[in-house]
Length: 251
Image (cartoon, rainbow, N blue to C red; front, top):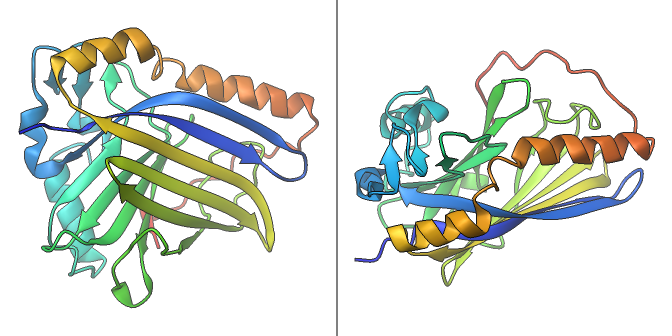
C-alpha cells in the first residue's frame, strides 16, 4: 500500500491592509493518520530520533502520545462525533530541526467525514495555542464550510491580538489546502494559503525532497524575520507582545 503522506507545496501570505505585502515560499509537509504513525519509519525517516527526516512526539500536543492527547482534548471539549481517524498535517524535522508556525489536526468521524480541525499555532517566542474549529451544529466540514475563531494569540509584532480568523479546509485528488483569512472588524487584513500535493512517503522520494527542499524547514525562522524587516521598512505599525492566553485551547 502506498503511503501518500509526503506533501510538496507552498505557503503564501498576502497582506492587504494598511499596505499590500505578499510572498510565497516552497514548503514540505507530512500528513498522516495517527494510527499509522509507526508505518512512517524507514532508513531515512525516524520516529523520536535523529535522521534525515523525523517526527517527534514532543513537538505536538502535550509532548507525549499524540493519539491520546487529541482524543482527550476532543472529549473534554464535548466533540463526540469526531470518533474516527485523525490526520496530522505538519512539517517534519529535517536533520533534527523544525519550527512549525502551525500544524493542523484533521479529525474525522467513523465514516471518514471531517468533523473538527485543531490548529496548533506556535510563535517565535516559544509560546503555543490551539484553535479548535467545528461547523455550526457540529455538521460535516467540506470545502465550502466557513469556520471562524476569534484571534487570541500573538503571532506577529505587526498585527494586534484582536479580530477574527476565517478558515476553509479542502482535500481533493491528493491535494490538501488550508485557507485562512484574518479580519479586523470588517476589514480583511491578511490572506494565508497553505497547500500541498501528496506523494509517496518512501526513501526515494525523501531523498529527492531533501535535495530539492532540504533547507525549507531550516529557512522558516529566517524567512519570518526577513519578511518582518520588510514590513518594518514599509512603516507598518509595531505592537509589543502581550501575555499569552491562559487557556491552551479556544473555540
